[in-house]
Amino acid sequence: MDSLGGGPNVLISCASRYGFAVALLSALASCKTAILPPNSTGHALQAVRKQCSIAGECDEAWAEDLLEDTSGGQHGDWCMGLDPDHTAVRLFTSGSTGIPKVVHKSTANLIDEARTLLNSQPWPRLPIVGSVPPQHMYGLTFSVFLPWVAGVPWVDETPRFAQDLRDTLAVTGAGTLISVPAHYRTLLEDDIDFTDVRCVSAAAVLPRDTALAWRARYGSEILEVYGCTETGIVAHRGRQGNLLWRPFPGVEVSEVGGLLKVTSPFIGDACVGSGFETADRVVLHADQSFELLGRADSIIKIAGKRVSLTAVEKTLCAFPGVTEAAALAVPTPGRVRDHVIWAVVAGRWQRIPGADEIKAYLRSRMDGIEVPRRICVVDKMPRTAHGKMPRSALLELFGSTEQAGV
Image (cartoon, rainbow, N blue to C red):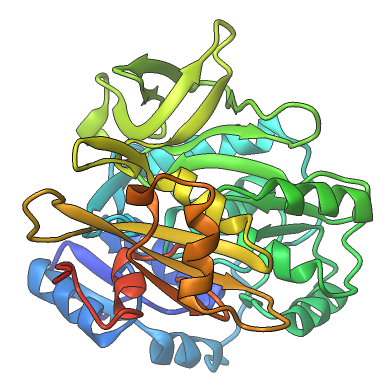
């Protein structure tokens, strides 16, 4: 990193964990901040360059050159002295419900979170493989910092297809898989043996049927983790017998106006002391365990009636063949309704249903105002590398942005 300029930030967009780790450690050793873009598209990277003073960039070409370095040499034992209060990374929220936001994390935020994970759960003393990229909070914590503090190797590749994952497990002997619900659902269709693999899921709710099918096949539960970019890890659960979330050590939760508030050492400077108020509705119990009821922005008013987008999605998923559904509230310039509902459904069909057929099914089970005005039927949902379904990607399926002219 001798080529770094005088700017305070290093832009890291390489996909390989080796290149990512070298770039991150070099930035921290140089007292610079690593900027982790929301994705590696030219548009996203150019937006970061315009907003931030960049000292250097570590992209895929840079990482490939790093692997070709044959200088070798014995480095011996060494220890980095890192300032715990230094702003280690600037990363972005997923943007699944709006525009991505920038979140700052200190070195202490990241290391304390990883150590809490290490000490609160049993982890195999084997390599950790992740199907999620390290540029986002979930992948950064579980597939980079957790292996570091645990003293176990991480796997460089990010396998997303069953055959790639099978090969990776066979070659590396990895004992922990870091992935997302959609990936676990597809893996159930394959014949990979996960009996001796510790599996972790986050970024979205793990469907109950997926969790139960996984346990029935492999005799173990997927560790489900709840958190977000702003808070880091918050709570965990297994799905056998108890659907309640239990906070990780050091995390305090409270309820404010029906919404979950989180106070922990993993939250960045912006919310230190005051805690972070999420948009998740919650039922909190005396022992600090809690039940999540869905996002507050999933409840909207249409013509004066409260409509739950989560309930619409659940009803859609009861239609034969539907495996996933996403409901959107889209603004419309009507006198009575200021929003209409659009929906996207994905499934496995013997015969692909039409939108009118699905609507007829819904009308027998829902109030008319809750039935989506438009329904798009797809083979699979548009997801990011970390399992999110951005609102913009869903709207693009309708050839629209935000305004419904209906």
